[in-house]
Image (tube, rainbow, N blue to C red; front, top):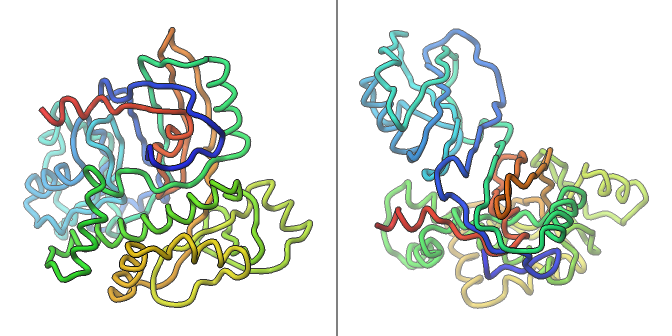
Length: 347
């Protein structure tokens, strides 16, 4: 993230995050209510210092089912306290004792029957509470930057989690496109990383010209909270009003087969941002994999953004983000935030 441009000027702070897992709290916002019937046990679990995949494996062992019988809407950070849903397929509707799951890492908040398997992405968003420690910077300037983010939004970057340790997923994707064989789960991860890298390139070009939240000629629009797109069409007072109230957003490409939908200035910028040798190789690999052209909003507005200084040098922030958006994008606009968990995860 440190290599990406900033939308609001120079960085304002240095700080640490994840000094303890409680400094990074994430709660899934559910997209539906359980039906109370069916053969899928829907578990709401609070985990601390645990990987989502590891918890899913633990659930499979507990239930005596294959790992493919356990699903979740999205992966959550390990070095954090997070709440998320899992579903376990139990065709005989006999649930083992949930108390057997309790540990320092796992606490079951609820267990309810549901009639469908939990699908990836089946959440309304995520609510975050973050605590930054050892904050160094001008308090008034930091307060003003957060207020600006609340009012204007910020660039909708794909976060560093998408790119793996030391950004290694993009080189691995290039190697896969060059013929290296990988497991199916790795393939999906690497395709996502390649797409995300190309999107961030386009967004970086828009940030550098301060057009990430305003239209270019030939803009393709996305409806807020939806994958629906429309345009290009000439700018109008109606579009300007919808843009101002965050009903629509400018968009950038998620690469795949097909022609870019943008035209004019927007098309020229996207083409130029994706013209170097590495970008061309990533584009070709994604097309060969059969992915189709899609779009993603360039702009993100955190909902209910609030902050308070718990004491000198300790800043608490809370906000909610739509699915697929990253809290690290918010932190990026403030300055250099060091992930303190790396010190003990590497040891």
